Amino acid sequence: MWSWFYRGSHDVNPNQRILGSVENAIMKLSQQHQGYMKVVEVLHLQGPYISVETLTAAVERLQRRHPILRSRLRMHIVTPDSYLLDEDDILRLKIREIPRNCEEYLNF
Image 1 (cartoon, rainbow, N blue to C red):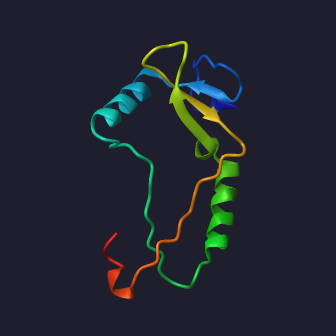
Image 2: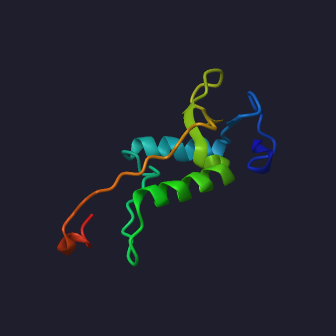
Image 3: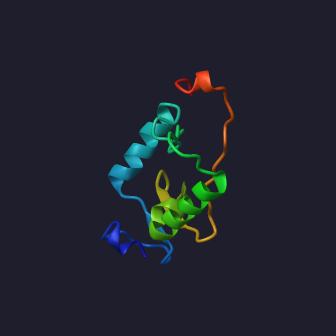
């Protein structure tokens, strides 16, 4: 499954991929700088109303298409100081609606 993403990786099983040396270095840097590389996004949607259900359905379609969006990052047990991407077909990204006043739209 991961062969398209990183050739030469020694997969533990078809749904797992060991991160390369550069990827591991980025993860270690992120830990040293309080999560500099955290993957969290706050969106401010403008235009016609989009329900949370519609947005959730669109994100679920993206996750089916892109394996990285349905993967977990964890420590590799065999190789110390190394990380492993573990693809999980039931993993769902969480979408949370944050209510706020109209005048607060520029402040996150």
